[in-house]
Each structure stands twice: as structure tokens, then as C-alpha cells.
Image (cartoon, rainbow over the protein chains, first blue to last red):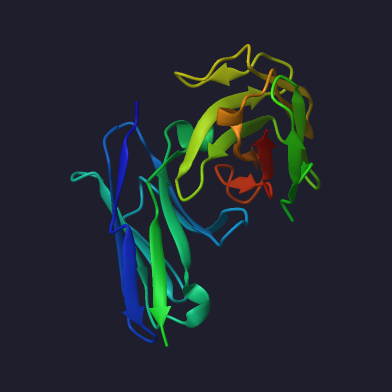
Length: 113
Length: 118
């Protein structure tokens, strides 16, 4: 089955700086890669996703890049703000999303004021 | 749009009893729903895929007789934890896929159910 590795487990950055979280996946059949933000005790919320036919996608301060050959994808957050502090999970699935998601272990992002 | 609800939000039960958790898609029809489990400070682990009108597909290591899933309509899936034990205490989260949404692959998550088995 799919295996998703996520690094780092904790990331502390100064407010206004950029944050980068990286994930690798093992199953070459995976073709859908979402990123979720989860605050303590709350549901995961989708912040951005990318499909395997696209190399990069951007939505305001958030961007995701995908390298299919190397089987890795990354989340980039620019101009970080205190409200960006949360746990971020990457995930992967095959079947165009008809299959369940395999999640990485999560990254606790801390924005220092 | 694309709102998913869960009920109850938290439940405490005695060891050996059964607990039913409901997952509803409120403003769309979900042919496929998923059930995940999340232990404290850990990631989400897929337990099973629930398809409307057919049997659920369970992930390896998940006991289908212990975690009963029913997806009787396009807006409701239920997870029943049978003969619950303390090790079943966890955060159970469902998600639903809207195949006719702007992105047919997006999974929308419910708010989760925190289960504590004494």
C-alpha cells in the first residue's frame, strides 16, 4: 500500500517568513495530493490540493509543488501569520480521490511573533 | 457548501457496550464516505471506505466485525463500535466525497467524534 513520509515534524518560523513542508510517497499510482490544516480538536480543513498532471498550484500565500519522478510534493506558505499556526498534513490517494487518503504524520507549524 | 456533520461529538461508554456514530453530508449527496481514526498527537488512519448500497471496504488490520459500517443512503453513513474496549478510545472522523462538486476528488471532513471507553 501507499506510504507517505512528512518532514519536518515541527517547524518554527518568524512571522512574515516562509515555511516549507515536504512529503514523499511510495505508490506511483497515486495521483491526488491534498494538504490539510488541523487546529487542536478540530476537523482537518483542505487548504490546497494538486493532481498528478500538474506540477505546481498556487492560491494566494499558499503553493504546492509536485515532482512525480522523485515522488515528492511540498507545501509553501509565504508571509506567515500567527493564524497559520496549526498541524499540517499531506496526503495521497490513487483512483482520482475515489480511494481513501493516506496521510503523512503531520507537521506542527509554529509562527513566532 | 459541502458540509459534513457527525453525531455525537463526544461519547463516554462502559467497556463492552456498543456505540454508534453518524456521519451526514448536509448539502450534497455522497456516494462514498470514509472513516478515519486519529489517536492523540498522531495522524489520521483510514479505517474503511463506505459505498452507498454496498458493503464497506476495510483497511488491513481493521476488524470488520468490530467496526460495523452502514451506508444506507446518499447522505448518511454510520459506524458502530461493537463491544468497545479502552483501547478503542480515539477521535473518529468521517469524510465524504462530492463527486459532482467543483473538484470531484475533494474529501470534506466531519467535526469528529471523541470516544472514551471506561
